[in-house]
Image (cartoon, rainbow, N blue to C red; front, side, top):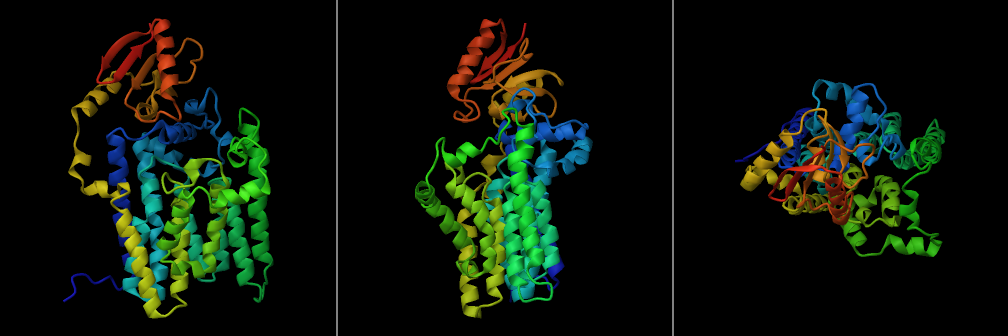
Length: 460
C-alpha cells in the first residue's frame, strides 16, 4: 500500500507544491524579521526604494547616502511593480511575502515539464528539489533582493527553451533586462541557444541572434550610460570588484576562475544539484554569464554558497537536469534524481528552511521584547540613525540612515544602536559606529536608554 501517490494532474501537483513552499518561505522570512535578523543592507534599502515608488517618487535611499538614487547602484526598475501592493500594505513584511511567492512560482514550470518528461514521481522529485534547493532557500531567508523576480522568469524561460518553444523562451527572458544589469548577458545566452536550436529551422538562427544582441546591448547601455547617470560618482561602482583595484592581466583573470578552492565547492554543488546528469544538457550553458562575473570578481562574497547570489542558478541547473532526463535511460535518470534529491536533503539542515520546525526559532526572548519596546518609543516619521539590523525594523515608518554615516545638518532626532549586531565589516564597522556615538554625545545627544547592549540617544 502506497502512503503517498502524486496527483495525476500536473497542474494540481505543480501549484500545490508551489503553494506549500510559498507558505514555508513566508514563515521563515517573516519569522526571521520578527526576531530582528533582517538587515538594512538589503531589506531596508529595498523598502526605502519601494516606499518611494509607492508615493510616486524617485527611489532615493538614505541608507545608501544622502540623496542616493538607487538606480545608480543596480538597474532594477521592475521592483516598482510592488509599489501598489506596498501602498496598500506598507511594511517590510510585504516585500518578504512577495519574494516568497515569486520564488515559489519557479516550482510550477519545472514540475510540469518534469511531469511530461517522466511522470508524476519524477515531477514530485523535481518540484521538491526546486523548492528546497539551497540557492533559493538561502535567498528567500536573506532579506529581500531584486532577483526574486529573476528566479521565476528564468524557470519559465528555461522550461520553454527546453521544450523548443522559442518565442515563449524569448518573451519570458526579456523582462530580465529590468531585473538587474548583468542579466542582459543571460538573455544573450538564451538568444544564442535559441539560434543554435533553430539553425536548421524555417526561420533560421536570426531571431535568436537578435535576442542575443539585445541582451548584450542592454547590459552595455545600462552599465555605461544609465547607471552612471544616476550614480553620485558618475560611474559604475562595481568595476573595481572585477579589477580588484588594479589592472588585471588575462592570466590573473584566468587564475581567478579556479582559486581559491571555495569556488570548487560552488561548482560542485551546482553540478550535484543537477544530478551531474544536467551537465550534458546545453541548458547548463545559461549559467555561464552569472558564474563568469562571480568567479572573476575580486569580491569573496560572490565565490561561495552563501547569500542570495546562487538563487538565479537553481532553475537553470534543474531545467538542465529535466532536459537531460528526456534523453537518457531510466537507470541513469533514477541515479541523477537520487543525487539531486540527496543534495536538497543534506542542505536543508544547513540553510534556514529547517527553522520552521525548530521551537527555539519561534520563541520570543526577553531581549527581543525589550528591543521592540525601545524601537516603539521612537515616533513615526522621525529621523533616525540606526545600526544595521535595527534600521530594517524602522524603514517602514521613519526616515532612517546608518549610524556610521556622518549626519547632515542638525543630525537625526534619534540614534539607536545594538552593540551586539554582528554586521561589523559592512555596512558599518564597529570602529566607525563607536566613533559616531562619541560624536553624537559630544553634540549633546542624551542617553534615553542604555541596557543589554542597546543604546538609544535623543537629540536635544
